[in-house]
Length: 324
Length: 248
Image 1: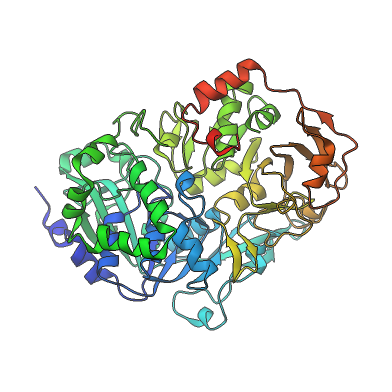
Image 2 (image 1 turned 180 degrees about the horizontal axis):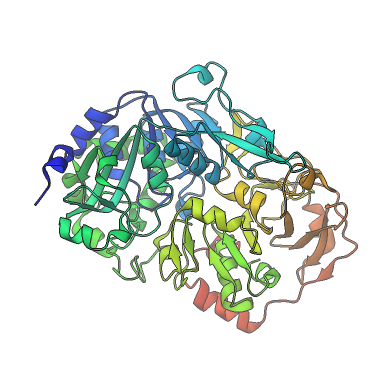
C-alpha cells in the first residue's frame, strides 16, 4: 500500500513542472550523455515553454540538447555536451555557443561532481588537484554582471597553496553548487518513497543531495516489501525527494540500464534533424508539442520500436541490437 | 591506431577510456596485448565484460559484468589513486608540442569558429592519472604550436613545468595518429616522432605537423599481425561502429 506521505508527492509531469520549475531556475539534470536522462520531464518543460533556465551539468547529452534547442536555456555551466557516437558534440548545444545564443562556462566532470558534493555537504568550496595549468582556471565564461546574479559563483576557480604544508603545492578551489532543482530518472521508487537507481549512478546522488528540490521520475512504483528487502541497493531516502512521477520508458530515447537500451533509430533521426533549424522545429512540433503527454509520446514511438530496445535484465542492455 | 596504442599498454595497467577510438584501443589492449589490464570508465563502471563495444562512456555496456558499478567521484578516486598505475586513453581536437590538449573550441572561446564537447573527464584524467595516451587525426591544423584553449594539461611548457605547477605525477606518454606514433623527450618533454607506419614517409608526417618536430629517432612500426586484425574485426568491433569512421 502506498504510504500517505508519498501520496502527496506523487504527481503528473505537468504538475511537477508547475510546482517546482520556474523561468530562471537553476537545474541539475541526472543521467549521463545517452543513459538515464529524465526525458519525460524535459519534454514537459519544453511543452510548458519554461524560459531562461540555468543548467549545471557534468556530461549532459540528449536532455541538454533538447532544452537548448527548444530555447529554454539562458546559461550553462558544463563539462561536456555530447551524445557519444551519435553526436560527439551535441548539435544544438554547439550551434547555440557558436551563434552566441547562450551564456556558458567550462569545467571538467570531476570538478562539476565535486561542486555538487560540496553543495550536498554544506561546505562553500572544495579543493582538487584537477585542472592546474589549464584554461579552465583562467578563461572565465561569464561576464562580471552575470557573476552578481543569484546562484552564480562570484569567482570561477581559485588556486591556493596547500595551507597544511608550505612545502607541498597548489590546489584548485571549486565553488559549491546548490541548484534549485535536481531532476533524475530512476528504475524504482518504493511505495514508501525510497529511490533505487540501478547501474551507474553517475553524479545523480550528489546532485539530488545538493538541490533545494528533487524531482524523481521512475519506471515503476514497487511495493514497500520489495524496496526494503535489499536496502543495500537503494540510493536515496524518501525525505530527500519532493516529487515522484511515474513515467515508464521515461528516459527514452536514452537508455535506462536493465530496462531498455538507447533507441538507435530515434537518436539517429534526432542527430539528422538537429543540424537544420527548420527541421529541428518540425521535430519539436511532431514529437513534443504534437503529443499531449508521455502516454501519447510512447504510442507514437510504437510498440515495435520499444520492444527492439528492451534490455536483457541480466546484461543490462539489448544484446545484438543493430547500433549503426 | 588502436593496435599501436594497445602495444603501449603494460599487462596489469588500469586503463581509463574516453569515447571513440580510445574505447576501441582499451578493448584491443584487453583482448590482445594486456589481458590482465583492467578497463574502467569515468562514469563509474570497473572492469566490464566488454562483450559488445560501448558507444559512449555511459553506455549500459560499461556497467555489464563489472566488478563494481559506482559513480563519477568514485571513478576519479581510482584515476588518481596513489597505489595504481593508471593510464588514460584520450582523444582531442588540438595538441601542442608538449602534449597539452584542446577539446573545447577552435577560435575565440566566447565566439568560437567550432565548438567541441568540452573536457568531460579528459582534464581530470590528464591531471591525475599516472600517464595518458592521445589519439588524433594527424593534420597540421590539429598539431599546432599554440592551442586555442588548454583543456587538459600535458607537459605544460616542458621541462619541469608540470611538476612546478603542482601536479604530482602523470603527463602524456605517447600520441597515436593514423600516420605514426609520437613520444616525448625525457628532459625537454618535447614531442618527437618515434614510429612511422609502414608505407607512411617521414616527409608526410612532417608536412602534417604544424610545428617543428624531431624525426631523427623514428623507426618503422611493426604492422599488425593477421591474428591481431582478425580479433579487432571479428571480436572487438564487428559492427564497425568505430572502425567504420576510418579512425580505427
